[in-house]
Length: 188
Image 1 (tube, rainbow, N blue to C red):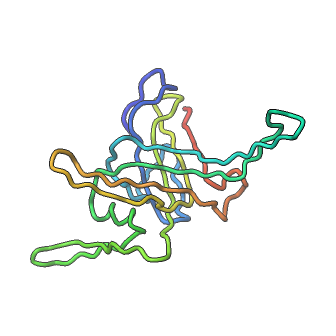
Image 2 (cartoon, rainbow, N blue to C red):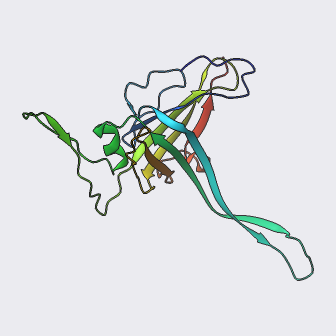
Image 3 (cartoon, helix red, strand yellow):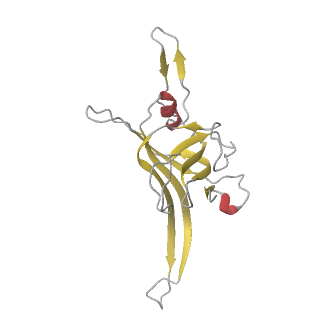
């Protein structure tokens, strides 16, 4: 990760996105990501969105709400990939299999049909810490790609592949609060 500069709590710069099989151990915040597949360079940043639906409850005697209940919550990660290897494209396309042929010419291919079953991954997003020149990382144990991936081939700009990863509740979470994983920031 490139250098973070003071004031550290004002974060600037890109984050890196990695995927692995669900159940893969997350690295420590300063550890190696060698067991993870980097999705490469992005365009427009990496957006982490905490979605929710909150129902406001009121009574006939009051004009304002008396109680709020969260009836749904979610976690989404959105990014645009510019490193368009077939291996990266395949991850977005339901973990499609990349097949290589020796040729001539040598080629690689992926199927474009995804079928009924949805591929699941673990997701790691590594960025900068708000506490110094260190890393922080989102550790999301179960995600699937939920966007309608599209790629635009244009003559005057690079092609990008838009993707959205949506967290699923981790059935193996140690606690209720760990169901979508956690955000960790290194402090020293």
